Amino acid sequence: MEPTINQSIDRINRDIEEIASITDSSPDKIQSLVSDIKIHFENINHCNFRELNESSFSEYSAKLEDVTQKVENILGEGIISDVEENELKEAIGQARLHARGISLENLPEEIILTIINNLDYEQIKTLFIGLQSRLSDIAQDEFLLSTKLPLDQRTQRVMNKFIEHGLSEEVLNERDKEILNTVEKLDLSNVHLSPGVLTKFVKLCPRIQHLKILSGVTDDTFQEIPATITSLDISGWQEMTPYHAHEKLSHLTNLTQVNTDRCTMNTQIQFARQVALNDVNNIRNKLSSGGAMTVDNMIAMQMAMNRFSQLSERSISFFEI
Image (spheres, helix red, strand yellow):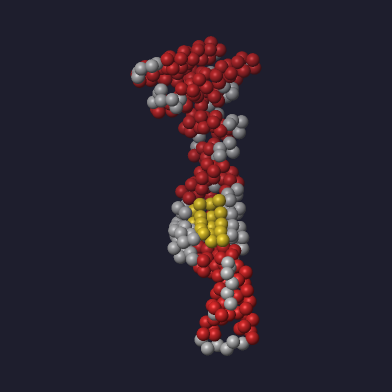
């Protein structure tokens, strides 16, 4: 076995050097060399590294890692075609596993997933090309949802899976749910919010603070918004005036900002001003309709004017009523 590994690694090194030395456009020659590299990787992949003693294993693992790195160096430089590049990536993915002393041929999925935890993000990306055909859909999700992948990519993948399966929690595994439990910013602008849809997302994402919604929004949708949110983006929904915002969102005690097509509101101030102004207008309407200026009305009017004045850049007086 050892001569096979040595010979294959030497041939791969020579092929890489030859590819790098080609100065003219010779697609047939490059394709032949790429095929040759792939064959030598396959020869290596049929060797069982676990038959080697510890020193030999370390030596050949280092050599194989070195040669796979050299192959990677020629990828993405436009020297070889995309198809050839993918073939080499698959061969590298399998070779890297063999460099760790394991065989892909009969490796259980759970072992593959365990191995992932010992690799970095770049290695995982390379390995996935080689492993994709070996893994079931569920295992592929586990593979790509490894904690080594960026959180936003993992979150988006879980969201897509949840949406594509009709918002069924049954398609989510425990890791999916753990990821959704960390979500603080939720953009549902492309999700049609028929009744109950937002509630399903809220159940899975209890930490939401920033929410963006649009499609299918009705007055009833606002009752499904969680009390935890501090900002709401509803750009595109024409009915969201400050008064309407107060009427529909006043139960959201942590909300500090609402973005709409018309304006961006600091909601705590806007809502309070709207309430105070409504009180002033209600009393003014009573008086203009022939109501008496009773002591109670005067006190109520003064209190409403005081509240409005505290939240406004200017004050109002009885003379303006």
